[in-house]
Image 1 (cartoon, one colour):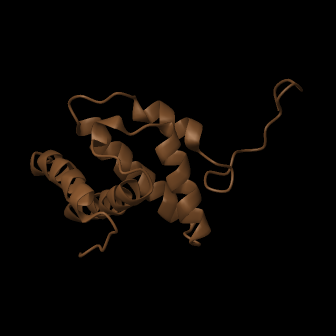
Image 2 (cartoon, rainbow, N blue to C red):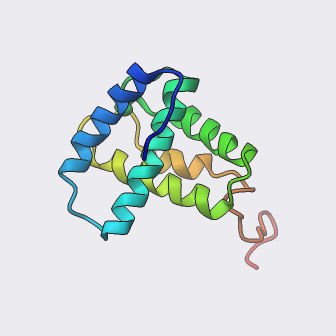
Length: 127
């Protein structure tokens, strides 16, 4: 898959970091690994164009929130967005030195239009 970007140097730097992590991955089916890798490629493109981020280990909540909104604006389904977030989390968990725990960030990033919440009964006791 060839991805065009406005910042090819930054994008290639991020992809090189992704490839280093992906080379050592032995988890998941071939299709799952492929889908997650493609999700990370798209996320790397987004990061290079919108934030000029040069280190994947510096991903934080604002990047995920912005990416979810970006995907929603382009009409991506909730299922696609959730799968992309799973791929991002998967590769981020494989990185050795990260600044932030992405699992916590993904949960906080969950936007109601992306991850529908069950009916809440807050303040009214158990359902």
